[in-house]
Structures are given as structure tokens and as C-alpha cells.
Length: 368
Image 1 (tube, helix red, strand yellow):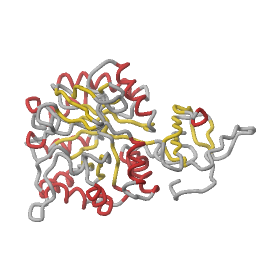
Image 2 (cartoon, helix red, strand yellow):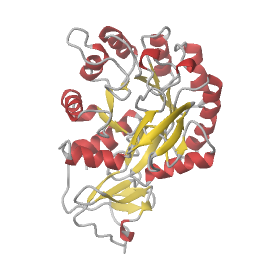
Image 3 (cartoon, one colour):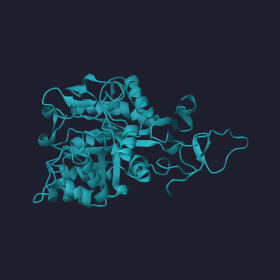
Image 4 (cartoon, helix red, strand yellow):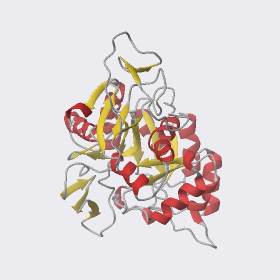
């Protein structure tokens, strides 16, 4: 609960919502020995189940969404990767329809407005400076469903584009950036409020050149994304972020690509080929980490059992904080009367046993 862990508590579900009082003769499901936590909210996710959100049919995208629902993600923002601007605009049209239908919570554009110095698994020849007119093209194509756009704010047009995004109610995220500390502070002052996968695809923290990491960690206006898969971050880096930003400013993400929930093999991430081996995705050419195969139930378990974070802090990072960031905390992100009945059931070992989305079981704990 928002007030902490409640032992021997109960959650009342009436239709699609959490209710304050139980209907007469309501059936009871006994989950003694389990945790019931809010549904997970993933604000940075490129696909799963063999499907990419940047390509493929509507059915493919729905398969990717369902894959993550099976792992507890009841609210998902679909992320695209760098591509031709016209292609991304067309893709935004398709994804916006799914947002209108309630299948996703909106669109996150990661690229093409990022630094070639920190491109990661993005095609360098398709990168471009964040000219406000080009940024506006993607915003318009999303028909009011653009939630976030990641950009390297130090590039020409970057600061003006941050202001444009804020003006249109879109989260400006600093990422895939080669910015200095001072340039990052300028971006935050202009309205940037998210650090895209903090530590990854940006200069390392330095004692003379602190770079973007220090600026993003120290400013209370910024929420920092963390990929807690054991590959993207050393546990000490995760602890540093939690200690410095505090549990109210961390959002766990998957940054998942289409191999999530699907297995090892060869995949395409935009125009680039990716090899997934033992669950780690890397570009075939160059070997850069290419997203993840993470699901949020695994991020939860790792955070509690390996990183030894309090359950309450992990719930904030997986549910309450991203819900607030999206402006959806009146409906999702916590177990409170009136909110959507989005629940995840975990056993005493923090393994997933049930998922409910809007009052319907996606994974039924009674069938385990």
C-alpha cells in the first residue's frame, strides 16, 4: 500500500476497479503467504515475445504487449528505435491507435535525435540533430499519444526541442548523450525530467568532469531510469543511484527488445542485427549492448533478493514513480480504492504467481 506493507490485508475488486467495500456475497481468493503489489508500469520497452514495437503488424505488437503482461507489466509505453523520420512518423500512427484502444499508455521515441558518440544500438547513418521542426513532426504523428522523447540535448536545437516537448506535454528525456555537466543542467532547467537508462550511453562519472550523471542524479526534478538486469549496471551503480536520487526518483525499466520472453537467437533492432546469447543482447557488428531481454518481474526479484532493497522502495520504482511520471497516478501505480484493479501476486520467494489487469486475470494464481 502507499503507506507501506500491510500484513493480513485484503484488496477488494469490483469490476475493473479497486473498491473500498466488498459487494454482498463476493467470492474470496485466499493468498496467504503471498505479496499483492500494484501492476508494474514500464515506460521504456521496445518489444517482446519475438515482436518489435518499431516494426511488424498490429498483431505482432499485441503479442509483444501480452508477453510483458504475463510478467506483471499491466501498463506499458511502447518505445521505438532510430529509423527514417517518415517511417517513425508512420509507426507513430499505428501505435497511437493502440494507445487510443487502451493497449499501451503511449509512445516513447528513443532516437533519432541522439549523439553519434553515444549511439549504442542505434544506426549512426539515421541519426540527426534535434531540430524543433523535426521533433514536432513526430509529436504530431503521434496524435496526442507521445509520452516521452529521448534526445541528446547538447546537439544543435536540443534545448529548443526540450522546450517544445514540454509545451506539448511530452516528457523530455536526456539520453544517448555526450553532454557536459553544465549542458545537462541547462537541459534540466529547460524542462527535461527523465534520465534515459542512467549510466548507459553517456559519459562516465568523473571527478573533474562529472558529466550528465551527476547533474541528473542531484536534481530533484529528474526521474532516473535503471535497467536492473545484472548486465547493464553493476550493483554498486544501482545502489549509488538509489542512495543519491532516493526511492521516489527511480523508475525501473526493461529497455526490452523482441527477444524478451522469447529466447536466444538472431534478431533485428531497427536496421541492426542483434545476437542474443544467454539472455544478453549485443549487436552482431561491434558488440554493443542492444537493449535487454528483461521483464519487470525479474527486475523486482533481483532488486529485493540480490540488491537487498526494501520491498516498498521496489514497488515505488516499478509502479508508483513511473505512474506519476506519466500523469496516470490517479488511475494506476498503487493499491487504492477507485484505481484500476491492476495487481501482481508474488510468492514468498518473489516469483510471479498471478497478474490481474483491470479486474481480469492475465495469469490466474488459482491455476498454478
